[in-house]
Image (tube, rainbow, N blue to C red):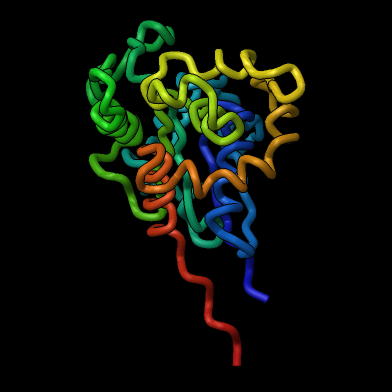
Length: 242
């Protein structure tokens, strides 16, 4: 039996991790994997950084510092025997924030914020925000063994599209809908959920089942991009021993 795929995850929060793990289960089929959320994480190795996009900003800078200027040099993540892949999650609506909104003083190397563009198309904004995210990591391009996960406007767009495909926000263009989370509480009482880890976990099987539909080429563009880039980055399983 081959060793499970080891995946490190940097995500804004615990509910994002539930959705991403469901997507991974769908994309990897029966292949075994271990998902380790390294942010938010309060272990002595990674240290407390807070939560949300501000925490992602701090984590990226800390990783770049450990890597003597770039994320790709961080041996805590990319050292031999540690992780096979790193997933970097950041919600697309972060493009609308200024550093001052997070009480941050940007470094000269940080990409300019806000960087939001008119939506549609959502990719105009996520393309700019990806550059900003990579600047926090001391990178100009996505490093090897790294995949960016950037839902537009946020992960709740994927949740609404997965669990409530007939919701009115879908027809309006859920990837440009200003506040997808608001649609969760507008569902019939028997099926509505809150943005809580326990609620998301209770629907994880449905999220996994819906992933191929929302990540199809003609569905949600950023889900499709995550699927495409993740599958391209996944190392092939080792050949079975003779």
